[in-house]
Image (cartoon, rainbow, N blue to C red):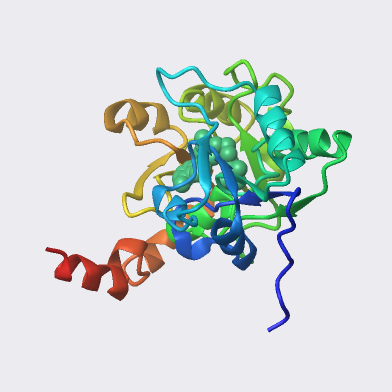
Length: 271
Ligand code: SAH
């Protein structure tokens, strides 16, 4: 195998940790976990992934957690720069992919401005990996030539004001929403008004790829009622489109993380 990149002291690896299942980490992210001196991680990084960190690594939580004052983006960046300037190997670990709704771009720009060499290590984004683990193909030849990834909230926590709902509703047969549990009723109204059928299938995938993964299926027209009745767990990704129906064909046979023989064996032998 071609040797992997060297993790040099004084550099930052801005890496995606994937949506949860540690099996979805890239080899580079796994190498970063094993070799980093400092790991700055977000709330979305799964504990099973953090468990792969070297025991010598200094772990710093820099995410948002309910009730705890969170670091501001400039403070996180300052910390990365400070550790790198001290000659540390710094792993900045984010859930999913760092460049997909993860502010990875902002952090990379800040590193470039501070003249700190860095490497971007892509990760499996929840909108693709999470769908796959829920038996929903992001694209399927007979269904969609386009898939859109949309955020359900802007930096103020509200539905972004600059989305062209008419264009989205008519041009993208499959739409995947991030951070949209709160604004979904409003989103559904806008899509239906723009011409999407209320009967369009919709799936809410909570804790995708983790052992606690849960999928709720409903329709665009019914989703507001379903969400208030079932209160799905967070984080959750929401997929809209006919490809949600493919799930019915696959789910009886697709093994999930908690059904993998390794996990079952470990559970059986647990004291
Ligand atoms: N960079 C991340 C996205 C961060 S934005 C990525 O590429 O996946 C945070 C949103 O991502 C959450 O609100 C949720 O919509 C989604 N998300 C992240 N991990 C998830 C998971 N394991 N299951 C379901 N949704 C997830």
